[in-house]
Length: 477
Picture 1: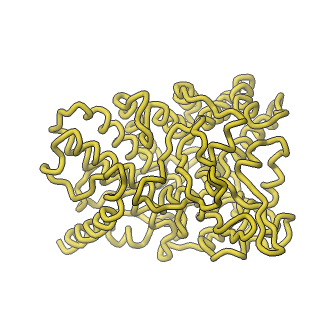
Picture 2: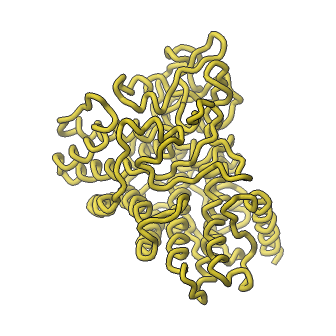
Picture 3: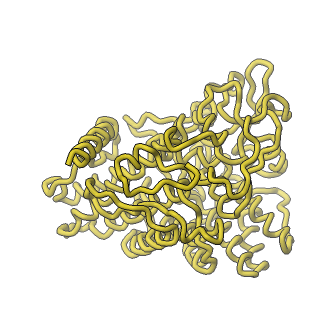
């Protein structure tokens, strides 16, 4: 009984903390412990849905956090970035894989995501007796966001299905579908976890609109998430079919710089505006602070990775810039940092899903099915919009490597790299180059994470296992 009371107290405090901040958004979220009086009108359910979406702006998710979150941890944990000694030392232990259950790496993401899932489950349970005009839409959105939350947690804290032969039978995550905060769910297997992710996304497709207001998911967004889930599961044809249902075009070359300066939303399927009054986040400062000539970088582009950007690749200009601090020069991360007004304040909209992923999912899945011609067509649908002289014509393993390289370049500093290395069963190899623009300077302290190392699965936070004895800890912790 004491444990249940403690959980209620913690949850009340956490949700109360959100309310004071979130209530000032122009899209006012709904946040409180569920009561039948709180969910009555169409407006109530709209506010409840917005409350779920507002979770995504938290620093531990896509808002940018010094402790690491969805926005930055997939790059910090992998090989796209080098620790910058000029910075504040943020996420150093995460970058060096120096974590344990008691140090609770990414505990913010774990906690905040389950809070988002709680909000989704509350709406879903209350909607059982609701017959408003927006019921189908908000129910679909809640299921899609519940699936996204579980997939994000599973990607960090569990194996990815294609990661190893035993992955599907290994520990997945607790897939929570109840708003009862006293439950103590056990972890499912990875296979069962992904089956439920897919089921939620397929259910969401039935009711989500083809078009939706800005900052909300639509059919393209759900189809893209479904394609990603199937790709992670190794269900190649299903991934292709879902990706082919995405209708948003890949952004053309001349729009790419503008996408990351908030001039254009070309090719962006799902984003969240950071400009409403009260939403005080600057996600780009997760990589650097101050301006071009007074740069204080937290992380810089890894020197070997920077060399992979061809001179005629527009992403080199859109994603990176040459910053300096006195005599020190850096290959800095521009993505999420620069605005259309030329200011390097890091206050840019959160781009969560983009159409280029659909084409790259198709390319990878077609290659895995042995359809090299179809794989090249999908790959070139991206490359022709990034280079003035795009490469093409690869076959065999060279084609596979080209697909992987293009995915790395396209989604650099954008919530994907660590997961890709995991599911491809590849080690992390950083190279012993330093943090300055010519590869000199101080390298990251940790250089290699060998295939099969337990650090590829982050430990379940000790706080979570203390509260729920049914949560089994990952091996090695």
